[in-house]
Image 1 (tube, one colour):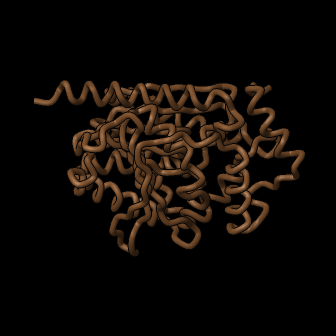
Image 2 (cartoon, rainbow, N blue to C red):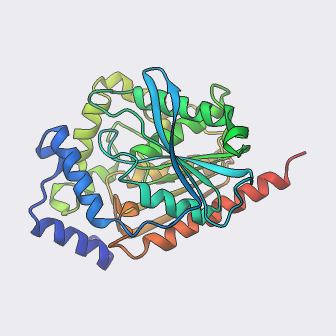
Amino acid sequence: MPILHPDAAAVLKAGKEAGRRPHEAGTPEEARAGYAAGRAAALPAPIDVAQCRDLSAPGENGPVPMRLYRAAGTAAEAVLPCLLYFHGGGWMLGNLDTHDALCRHLAQACQACVIAVDYRLAPEHPYPAAIRDGASALSYVAREAARLRIDAARIAVGGDSAGGNIAAVLALMGRDGDLPRTAFQLLIYPATDLSMSTDSYRRVTVDSGVSLTDATMRFFIDHYAPAASDRQHWHASPLRAATLKDAPPALIVTCANDPLCDEGRAYARRLDDAGVPVTELHLNDQIHGFIAMGGVIGSVGPILDFAGAILRDRWRVGTASRP
C-alpha cells in the first residue's frame, strides 16, 4: 500500500474531482494546456529577488530563451555562483513561467544566481534538441560569466524530471571536456534511463492513482525519443554511461510514488560506487511533480532550502580547495 503525504493526497483528490485527464489521453497541445493550468493552481506566491530578467543564448536553431534571477540581499556588483536550471515536463511540457516560483526560491536558498533555460520541446523538436539547447546555454553562461557577474568556476546544473535528465547529461559532457565543466548537479526525480524497465514502472501504473504513471512516461518518451536506438545512448539515458567516475558532486531527490524512482536511486548508487560525493534525499510519501507545487504541498519550501544549503556548502568547499 503506497504511503502518501496528506498534502499530496489532497492534490490527487482535487485533480480527480476536477476530472483532470492524464496527459496521454490527449494531444501534446492539450497536455501542455493542462500542465500549465495545473501548475498555476499549485504555485506559491513568488519570492522577491534582487533581479529577474530575460535573456537568451545563441543556439543551433536560433536563440535559446533564458531567465536570470539574482538573490535578494546580494550586491549588484557581486560575482555569484550560478545554478543553470532545466524545467520538467516530459521534454514536452513546461516553460519559464511554470517554474518561475521554484527558480526564485532556489535563488534565495542558494544566495546565488539561477538561470532557467527554455529549451525546445518535443514532439516538434525531438531528441537531441533539448540536449543541444542545454549545451548552448551552458556554453554561453560560462563564456559570458564575467559580463553576467557569475563565477565561472562555480556553475552548477540542475533540473526536475526531464530537466534532471538534461542536467545529468550536461554534467557528464562537461566531465568529458565536450562542455564547460560544472561544479555540481541538482537532480530532482531525474529520468536517467529511457528503457522504462525498472520495478517502479511496474509499481506506479494507472491503477496507482497518481498523476505520472508508466503510461504517461511512455507517452513522453515516445514523443521525445521515438527511435528506440536513441534511447540507448547515454545522451538520452545517462544511467547507461560507461562510467560516472569524476562526475560533479550531486544531490539527488527521489520519491516513491513515481515511475522514475528506481532509476533516480540507481543513479545515486552508481555515483557513490564511482567515488563521486552524492547526497540522496528519498521521500517515500511524495509524488512526481511535487517540487513545483509549493503552493499546496507544504514540504516543498524546506526541501528547496535544503537543496540550497547543500549547494552553498559545495560551492564553499570548491572555493576553499582551489590552488
